[in-house]
Image (spheres, rainbow, N blue to C red):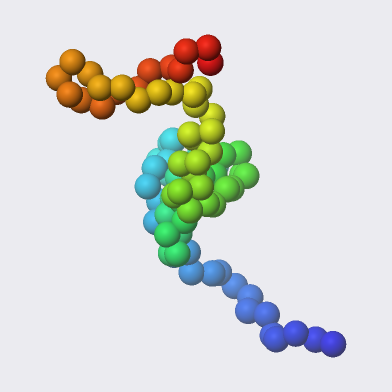
Amino acid sequence: MTGPPQEHGPALNTDRELWRERPDDFYAPSVFVTESGGIGMNVGGTVFVKPIRAWFALAEAAEPPRERYEGPHGEVLYRPKAGA
């Protein structure tokens, strides 16, 4: 059984690059947004693409537990939880 014919040749890159460690060095770490809105990171040729909420959940999980409190001027602040 054969599938549909495969297209050969260059593909259209629809990603929008946001940051590259060294401009014009395509091996340098980079951050980009995909056409569908995913945030991608490329480091050493390994690429991860995730929705923004998934990246936020990863960052939040890596942080030590914090508690919210009100500052002296009514501002919302965070501090490490006691015993954490």
